[in-house]
Length: 320
Image (cartoon, rainbow, N blue to C red; front, side, top):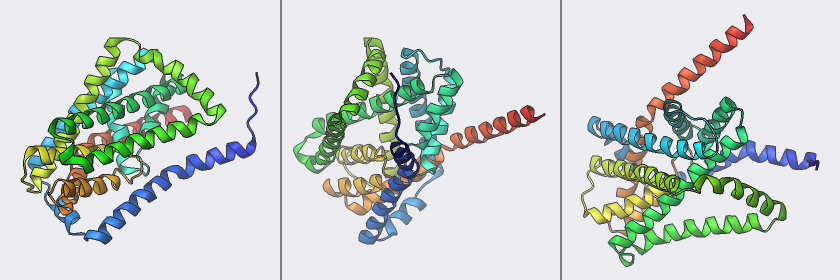
């Protein structure tokens, strides 16, 4: 059967792909601007100046652990989908994708690049894109479950505002799926993709591996946020800081940001205020966390530089 693509549909999709990252980045900038207008710039300045060498060292180690675990998760699912992916390649590509997500608008450009590069290397771009989408979605699902579990362990009633953030995330995901399911063509595509992806999670070993890897990633990110809290001098009971940190880290994964900035700071301000630590403290901690995360992902810049040098060298060899 031949599928006919209308020019209008293609041009609309192209415009959406072109402007989508910039729209998401603009939303992140708007969130930051609203926060600055409400509380001023002082919490951001305090967060920037509070970063210390000890905090940077801890963040680098934690980022390395999170990156290795995320690369392991990717390798599990890629392997289940019949794709070749080595350890060194996966860790380098994951560092690069995180760095690109941090410095480019939209928060997902690095993942798209990672999928395309891997797909071209194995001549299966579509399957590689599915593997990346699956590992990121699985990671977000585990993060959400762990966040609910942490807040349940320390008491839902005491942190109901934080639970609101989690419930809103779930509702938005359900609404997005419902909207997609309302379209017959989208339903067909979802069923087809689900049939392909289901095999990646068909064995207990794969599921356990993905859950274990995702847990390490979440713990490392929350620990980095706690390092940021210590760097800016926030002193409070562990359960209160932990609850707020879980919500802030969860908000970091929302792809409506500029290099990760925007929703994270808004969620941190709200969560820290909800647990009685003050919105300003949340903003300061989130700013320090953002700075630490950017520094810790510096190896990704080195991977980008090496990739560019290799590409230029191959181009020169092709010409000669």
